[in-house]
Length: 313
Image (tube, rainbow, N blue to C red; front, side, top):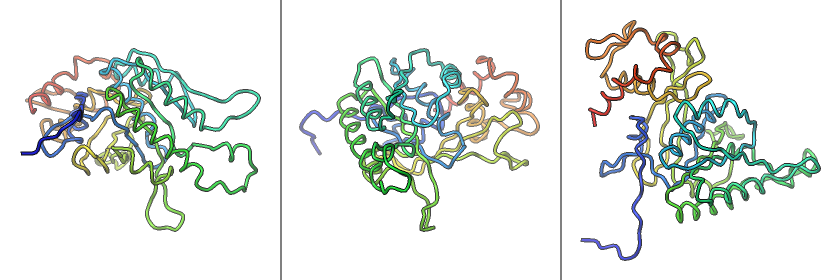
């Protein structure tokens, strides 16, 4: 028998209610749920919904943890869209937007990341978002000329930020950090990579690759209204198994929809069928198009699918 001496806190897990998402982080003992007190890097190719997915997941986690969200968006920021996404998943708290630029001088993103860590240390902030790692611009790059060599500076900044966050999350296990990153071909032509250096790869406990799912028959990756399905693959999970997959249904302009995600999980598990119309337990729920456009704001309509998944355990 092995006896651990000392104060070694167990990994805390959050059951989000997203069936396949919770089970994608399963460990060898069968424990499910998203590990909190950790950092998650979510990456994918351009224009597939990385920010939307992270906003939704951050809102769900913050809702259950009972805290607010700190957002460092280094790319672009649409407060109305963010509000819509967070309201879709039921988040009702505050979002602190961190922007450390002023009118006289463009400050480096080092200060923005430092502020993000500082805000996340506050008791009433439970979730931090960095969007995105690839957009980090060091002071030397901001103040230098185009063509100046600044190789490695982003990696150094991200390494320091990662180490600070590691200690922050270790000391505050009821918090979580989400970082968005890009995924692009290497310049030498061999495979793909994410920017931000190697230290980030070591320290972030969870790394998830997302892509859009092709819709049957049409082979398109969006529905007529612009909605789409995300497939996530857990490429690194220090607290469980890797290469597990999950699916999220992203409603156009609204973010991850819990009810439609339950419908898709039921279809994937053969608990429901879709042959023109979606049917479960001999009950017809209409075609998926109408479920997307007409029923998305009726939570009771989707409850049977959530109940069915809960019954599966």
